[in-house]
Length: 238
Image 1 (cartoon, rainbow, N blue to C red):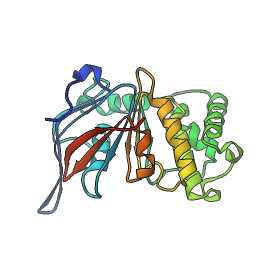
Image 2 (image 1 turned 45 degrees about the horizontal axis):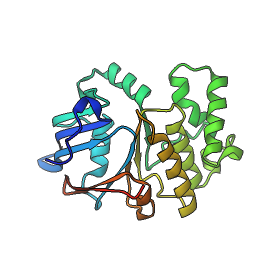
Image 3 (image 1 turned 90 degrees about the vertical axis):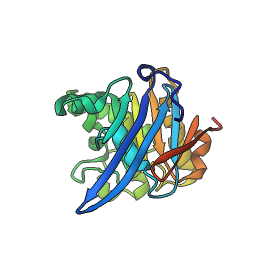
Image 4 (image 1 turned 180 degrees about the horizontal axis):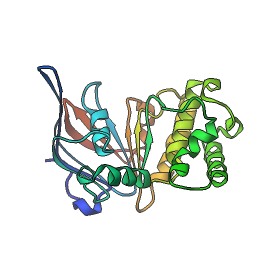
């Protein structure tokens, strides 16, 4: 058992014995083999390992995009997989920000409108939501592209829009799947510093899945995965 010193109700993320198997036809693929993992409040944790080791599956289980087959999975003390569909959606909307590798921007909306979506879903007035969206776009270096559509932006710019969208509602947990994959070293470093600033408060956390060794220095701790298991946790250099 690895890294379960923090009590479940005091952790940002608490996984004990989490498993996940995918079934296609008569075949089974075991993606998670009893994951034990804690991410603490106020830290930026990175999840690293070879392709196919289960990193993105674990990220999706923690964010309740996928259900675990077994085990105890909690986010800020809440057993998110025990919630009904409405409660789960509400919990994610209030507490989680997502940065997906594929960006998932809406092509018919401008950058500021894409970033404002989480605030609009929460019921904020459009004028207020768009104003906040422009502030966060400026934070990631895209203040001058607020009115551009995704098709008018480079891959790296689209990725920064997706990052701004995750930050705009000030979620307690930000989960990121390869957030620097389309960014140069300088921009990637700036983005990770922004994410660090979001994490190092008493009641927030950032979990980053990455292959990008350039950004390891921004981690408080690095959890290494292989074959569906956490095989080690080491301190970062932050």
